[in-house]
Image (cartoon, rainbow, N blue to C red; front, top):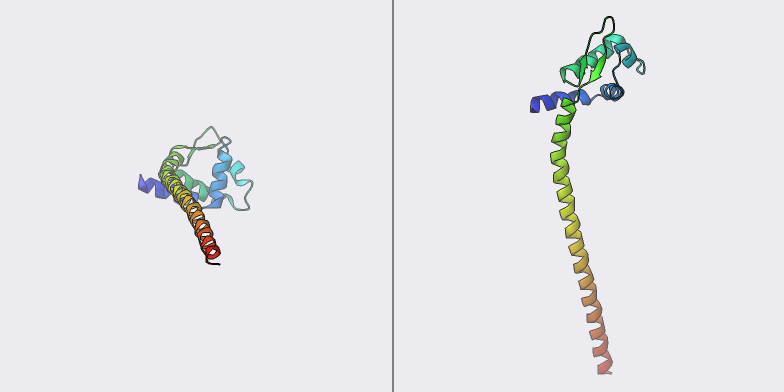
Length: 130
């Protein structure tokens, strides 16, 4: 699975390929349709599509002269699962940090009360001396 994840992340590293995937999320498209928003040659678009296909992110079909590309969800689900592990870790870490900060806040309130009581005590002692 790690090799597949590496290929998927490698394919997702390029903004053009991410834009192609975003377009395919709304439905099938031909190579010509996918190339329209980009100022690059058809061979360059084809290279991007080959990277996406090799990573399993897209599939290309054949319907007569039309070769539609479609999004494949498997590799993206693998990425989501991998990221989910870390999301849980960070949520738990932030929760522990929040608990710790609340504890410090409570202790800080306690220290303020002690400081004010110490000041009152000192004030009372100085008044008695007079």
